[in-house]
Length: 338
Image (cartoon, rainbow, N blue to C red):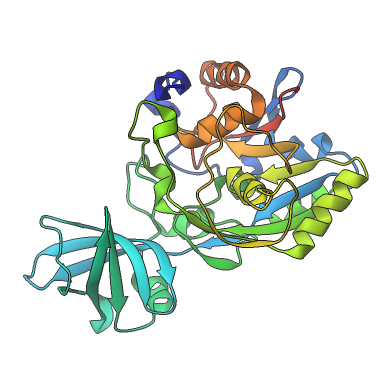
């Protein structure tokens, strides 16, 4: 398979630069037996009693920091992941890359030593706990296709209402459409809820480098799927209900924990790359935003819904002027017939 097989034409003006006024105010493209244009507010009516919605409860950290190098030059640090209280893996953007042993200075007198490098990522050790520093002086790490700096509204809207566990540097964007009332309405419709954690890394926005898809690999991300989630999935399927993943991150978490053939509790790393031909073990439907052309997430969608089926849906969305990517509209997608 080639990356170019997963392309589509997207006018720049369809890339949503700001969220809808209300979280539930987006459109929803239903991809089931046929394509149907709906509103996200219609979601409860699309659920069946006994369905299970699986949410990713990761919390986005303010991962972008301004820094000053030893030489006085400016740098920008984008945290990829926090490891313990003071160690991080990060991208460092500067006119000259810092060397091991050099130091970066941040607001509040905090410093960080560059302790090593792995490809494009640097290992940094801070002189103070990282999470409080980020909360006080960091900036929301908006995706690169949002051609603007983060504002105060992004601190709330680039975060799900159910975010709990800090560690992501990109939002699980399908969840951004849910407000508290919508969560309650899905329960009233007879669905139940379960939770996973997958800390989304900045690698989610990186392009695949090799044209031959199988030559690529994904950066690993931390994931936790606990016993309560596994029990809920098994009970749902045993009763004939559907497991509906809210977002591709929930899909990757569930499928990573199902690598043995059966969903079992799992805490660790995942670099699972889902391509057409993959057999899904734990997911029957999903709610998702629209993904970038030639991206690994579009390939995941093609694996789930069928390549021609998903590309036809994307072409329809372009024609109908849906809003794309993180702050854009959503899809409700059922699995392709096997």
